[in-house]
Length: 637
Image (tube, rainbow, N blue to C red; front, side, top):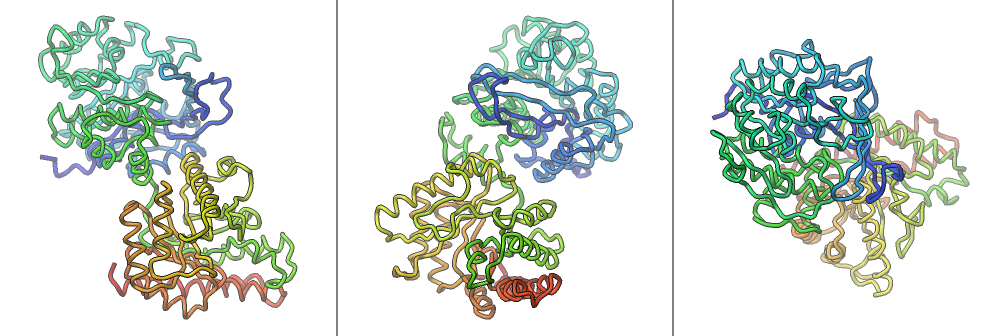
């Protein structure tokens, strides 16, 4: 039974930094040309891993009062990790780690941790009420390496223990962080040292669960003979001991230690093609604790740990690679090997780790380019004037939304760059177009390689692509369009951007209530699973039911459909809202010209001031937002 007075399952204590992972695989760190930025640090990774598996987790650490520290905090919040114990240190910088994947056995790694923020954690950072709220605390071997963090870690363990909680010890031995190797040997996992053993063993009497690799249990037990070390550990603690053995799984010891490793509780691993073993131990700990803290058997808990570790070694990165509960269940149900290429599992990971949920989304679409360039619309407006108007459009949105995450904006990089920069500090959903306007077959703006283009886009920008597409398009045209859509989808996944596909049926081709859903079905058949669809607003109940059924069958994890406007009058759009609102898959709208066209015409003609243009656009946008919300509320979805 879970103690009713505990609001957290686990508080992890210790390292919190930023991993800069080389994106090129198979070479020296010296030859890496670009790096992906992830949350790092073993306890932080474990807190995220456990949270993704449904445990209520918190983190106790320090980060710098800097951009990297704010990144860590924001990522923890997105993952559902309690950050009350994450303290901003104004005197020190957030720790960094630079690392790469040279081969399946070699992972060059450099720790930038000189006087870093998390190593300044001290007993004054311990909040008694916060620690008392936890069913368990996870302490970490690295944080026993200096007097201040040693006192903080053991002080926290004693407080949790005194309040009826349990103590978990991750040995997490990195010789370089104890000053035992050259600074460029961060990947080295074992150097025998009696002083380190003595320091680590001081935590043993407090522990209920101890987890380490074979090398880590050797340093903890003070012997290079593994079973002898485990006997030495047992002499000082009754804690359950778990020895991680990589691809072979793990061995656990709940009671007396036998004379050989294989006589313990042997839990085999999963067959997997290894890309990157870094982070696998933290994933293992997350899975193990998901079972152990939910009173599963030790064998089942270890099996969960093995499965989580297997999933992570197949991926790039540590914290972002941690599996969700849905992924873990998928692998456990498979009861065997994880395929080297598992599209379904990869999609499940992507869709179940997306930040934020959007049950409702109302977007001002002002990403138009050709419409602003057409002199017949707004005169021969120059680039600067167009850019200025788009910034006014964003400010109109902001005046209505007032920091509400249910709102968003679509802006282009050609004329909307300044507005995109202004939107960067907002909480709003932000989309950005990639297509060449009116291209059929589809073409992309920017670099000839769409993935290279997307690498320059911030990760919070959703890639929007409008494609004129019909299920009965001629074979050659359809093949070219399909190739482009597959390229775009692959690029978005590789660059970690969400994708919104806007589908408009060509006017010259016939359509009925099933045509658009057929088009979506054909795109899904390509293996393309966009996060969002943007579709025309009108349609019968049969039309919307067919769309909802298609998306539900092909990708039940799709975020949903946004209605576009097609420059329809406001009253007609509101009527369309009422038709679409009963269908759960429709989440809101992304409408532009209906809102901004009249204001733009007057503003470019010089008959409307900046303030009045913002006011006019805000009024129309507000009416549509209220109309959508009312339509949705009326059907009680």
